[in-house]
Amino acid sequence: MALILLGAPLGNVGDASTRLRDVLATADIVAAEDTRRLTRLARELDVTVAGRIISYFEGNEQRRTPELVDALTSGATVALITDGGMPSVSDPGFRLVRAALDAGVPVTSAPGPSAVTTALALSGLPSDRFCFEGFPPRKPSERRAYLARMAGEPRTMVLFEAPHRVAATLTDLAAAFGPDRPAALCRELTKTYEEVRRATLGELAASAAEDPPRGEITLVVAGTPERPAERLTPAELAVEVADLEATGRPRKAAIAAVAAERGVPKREVYNAVHAPREQP
Image 1 (cartoon, rainbow, N blue to C red):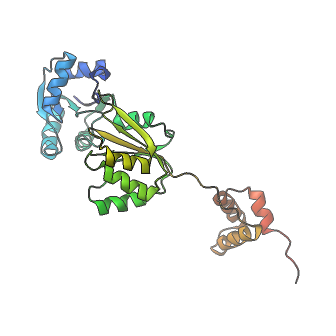
Image 2: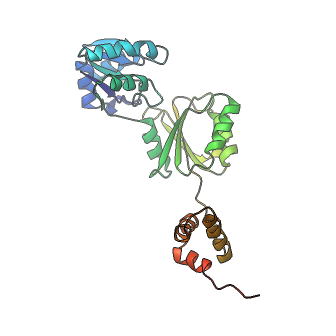
Image 3: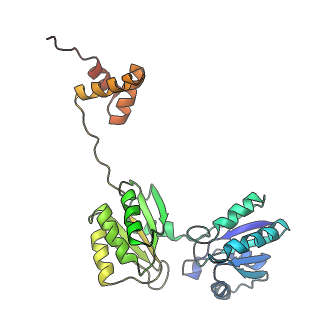
């Protein structure tokens, strides 16, 4: 009894793991986002799916989830596979994972390709810290408001977008983040027509308008650059400490807080507070 999440190839079937093949061949039930794609993948991998194949996609996952949990609690092994990448990452799966865990069913994975980390690695942008934002809102007004809230994000951002909306989204990104922000448009990763466009948001927006990209698209956008901390005068540092003291903070704690906030040594703040005052 277990729910197994299968990392499916993004396009190149050579990326399928041995464990993916084994689970497809032995699972009691294989729940697939697209049963036709699963059948084609199994044929290309020369794997016979002996278990029952059922569809599990956005339109029926609410109805199918209780059925699959019943099968799991009865002792079945259920494999979940989407069209590409890991289930539940902007794909069906989260609802089933949550329901299985709530029912006390073990959940594991046969990990595999991910468009998120693949695009991030290929982008050439900083990858030590990043955030995944999924698909931005479809409505232009909601998308602009959403991107405006993200404008100060310091981490590299990864987003998915549909090809018919990508030019508008890049235009909105350039408006919210500035046209000079570095970014990358990755499409059809691992497939025959894989392409990575690395440029500024303004350049990518113009390119997408002139030459609309097709296929599966992942956008990677650099985070906002760090700005040097504002350097305060000793008098200004002393005022900030005094403001904290007025709220009841002990002076020692107030000095430490101002030093941390302003990125200066505590000794510098201490000296500012205890500097001799000019006599009138």
